[in-house]
Image (cartoon, rainbow, N blue to C red):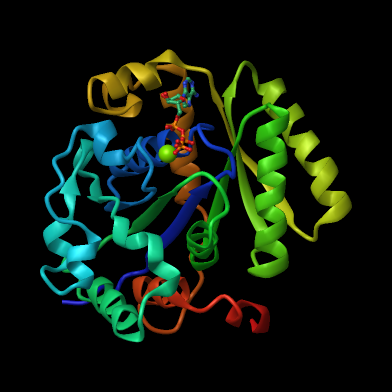
Length: 277
Ligand SMILES: Nc1ncnc2c1ncn2[C@@H]1O[C@H](COP(=O)(O)OP(=O)(O)OP(=O)(O)O)[C@@H](O)[C@H]1O
Ligand SMILES: [Mg+2]
């Protein structure tokens, strides 16, 4: 059975390391599951703090095994809190932009043959602005930038948006202020970001959430879970729930063919094609 329903695809990025991309991806994904949606979290970060490590999952097979034809995508999917479906990180992903034509086709087939129907796909990316991170941003319908109120985070988010808008045609960004001490701090951070993007880039930014500093995020990971699951009324969890409800209102554009297929086709498209689109 192929995936026929519309799928919302969101990539979570931010430029700088440690700003909270994985925390946002995981908690938002689980909050969406709690709203009854079928959600898949695609871990595109090969760093140390992988989603499977955060949740203590045992990964035996990964996307490399799918690409080599050893198993299907359904075989590697793991289950997280609230029934979240997780595609674990894979070193095979590192060369995503260098895959052969056969592997491209294999990846597209893997997604289009997915047995489970899903409503939302969230992609957690690595720090930095590698080709892989940028490709995942280009292929998604929405790009969430996680930004802290620190000059380095703001500078790195700006640098990533600059490359994405100039070279990849991504012009719209949803900003999440993370590790905020107040809503005012979030708004201030957003103003700082706007000051530079309005001046130098042709992009539009929307502040979609301000996540407070909350020790429960770390505590939850120590329990191999996430805050929205084990500390549902903590300050950050409350905001994640509001954000999840808001995400459901974001429109899903019509695309030719299946949504997931379109996503993967975009993902593996060569860099220079982006300039023509
Ligand atoms: N709002 C928050 N309040 C308190 N701690 C937070 C918050 N957000 C994230 N953290 C903590 O900051 C650390 C880094 O978070 P996380 O791993 O989500 O960042 P990341 O951007 O995915 O990092 P990387 O670039 O390494 O992938 C973790 O210990 C996490 O628990
Ligand atoms: Mg991470």
